[in-house]
Length: 302
Image (cartoon, rainbow, N blue to C red; front, side, top):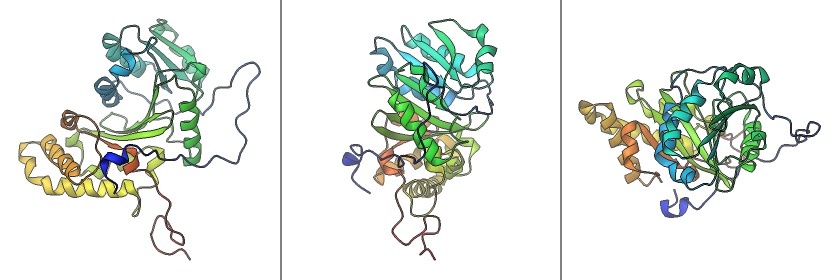
């Protein structure tokens, strides 16, 4: 592993550009890009990522003359979008939140919740409806895509950001107890964050099922994200004695061990007590297997 001081300067390259043609434009305006999600949502489901946004992104929003946030793919109800407004609104003067859904019926269904410019709902997809937001929260929208399509969605969202903007793309379980997300700016992915109700897991690698699409199929021997989770599990096992003080203390001890091993962790250690850890993307980004080997087995291909 490279030294942490140099790792953060590196950017992981995104997947190769697709061979298929780019989406065509509808007459007079860009067509909303993407596919409808299942629409599954629950109150407080996205609390973990929202708390991370409050802890890390307020300066970005407060320093902007127009703190515009897009909640992409809010689902069958507006509840998580409205919660985002409630959490960020008191902290950011002039906050605007726009929920985007590719399904016009879902937009029509939440018309009563509109209160522009504070909160609004529109038809839109990965093209972000041309809004140029400073922050995009895109949760549970890319799991239905293949990896190549998900990479294109990343590219499209990043291209639609305002200068200095950030995309936060990830997944969580239906109750918001296990979550993982990637933060991306205009140049590419920056970090991976894992967040969990620690009493809900047997080991950190239980979160593997919630890895974003860009990583979930690379959690195999020989890939950096697999190495990271294996190191985390080993540190967790070593910290078993801390369980007497509660699962959070065991989590903190395991994360401290990761930092001591040289994993390039990001952010304040105060976040660790919330069952959270953030690592630089360069430490977990997928790598190509050596020639003549299959990624899954690590053995020579027939």
